[in-house]
Image (cartoon, rainbow, N blue to C red; front, side):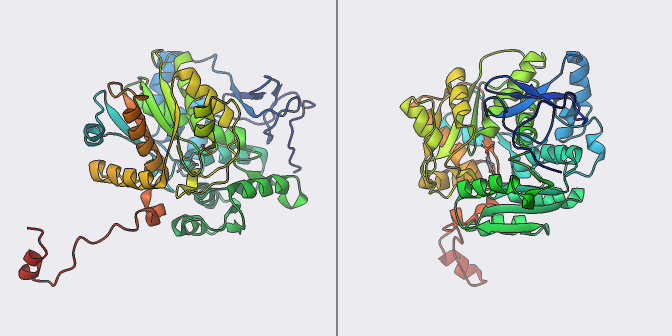
Length: 429
Ligand SMILES: *Cc1c(COP(=O)(O)O)cnc(C)c1O
């Protein structure tokens, strides 16, 4: 199968069944094309996204159908680009992760309006990436791809490897060669091809774009490149779950990490859909974006009042967020400004401090990306940008076991001989 970069209008109808997905539509100019493995508009090169037909849904019937669905993302299949029988196919069935009421952390940060941590470390490969890969896998099946691939900052590589193993696809994924050992092992263990590239994520991504146009990449579904419109929709499930877990209610404020910015933009899309479908009552909400100072192209642009995002060379321990040229950066700026939120960044030292704060108060061990969101939440409360009297949801998108080096200084309180005398001498009682 030849992989097209740009959509073609010569075919008029969809030849695949991806449930309520009706077409691909350009986010810039609105030009519509049939569903296919394409990601850029032929008219203006803007990003393509999924357009749906939800017109047949009755709100109360839809709510009942969702509530009776499985305890994973497929409960929202009527709102996703997947076939109706998706839950019967071999899949990792991610999602329906815990929304933890974080009262101890709230007390520590002075939040009185209710503070929740959406803990996506509970997914099958311990990061939020299982959500997006599950969508891309269905698109790959529909378009007849046999190899799954991606450019990754670490977590995506593991999610693709695992999903491919489960679904019987070949996988070949590309990462910067110098990632954390935990991320490399988690990506390699599922048995697919794992290729380290001498360069940073932006170099890896550029390489993958070249591979797509080359015969060497024929028949390959790159989950975050030529399948990106489908992949991206997986992040909507975070918005759906948060609202359903709050009792079909919108939170007032959300703090979301930014790598490419895709997750943040699709959380907003998911919230907007719930409002339009009548599943939640319409009210204002604010979305805050979180970055590490060592890779903060979006927060830098936000603070400077710019509409364009100037690329940076990443240098931070938050490697899963280390995208120096974020594709969805300008859309993140729009959403933060439209909703009255903000984009903020924290230093690596503040990331480590925040990882420990979350672990010590709530028993949740986050990877560096979770340190970024908790650290930014603290900073936004201190600056007054985030209102502590409102319901706030902070995302933890990955598991601390994958980034153990970040907290390497943490260890034994004391080493003693196996005797009471030695224990007393250690000064702990
Ligand atoms: C990929 C990733 C994100 C968000 O990525 P986007 O490209 O902004 O969608 C957040 N947290 C973790 C841990 C990730 O791996």
